[in-house]
Length: 221
Image (cartoon, rainbow, N blue to C red; front, side, top):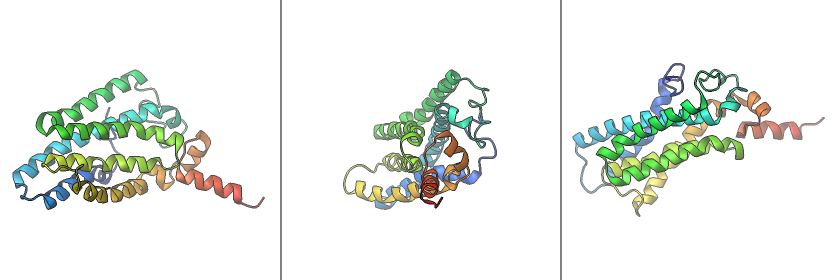
């Protein structure tokens, strides 16, 4: 099950840190604009809760992605050995495991943080569910992934009492999100070109695939 959660090697530690960065950005942002300083013990508490949330939320997103993309994964050298793609875990078991991970992610948010945090977390869960379908209708699915990661800035801000979706906090929060979107869009293997050849054969969309297709069409014969 560690493979479906991407907690086994070769997933680099830097990637795990990258996925947790928006929460730290949200906490730093909220702490800097609130009228009263956030006590260190409160910040430590929020970091711990959000780390638990992120671990299970990210794991759930990976499990969902593997289930939805299993047909594509079987045609991709980098992904064909994933548990669901190779048949080690059934589709039904993958969905059950995904549900467990989502509930485990939402539990600390619902129990220990403000109600607004639960709603923000549900939005992040929904965006994570949309991401794998993006590869079917857009060449910029990684932007969806970046927005998904960036959405957790709202959750972090609410966790320390900042109404992140109310002006003027909303405008300031939006300014924090583009770096997260761009960072995710440039660091995933599919964006770096590792899967381009396989994606062209299987029909997965991506900006590198679109560029390769355009180059072929425009090249002299």
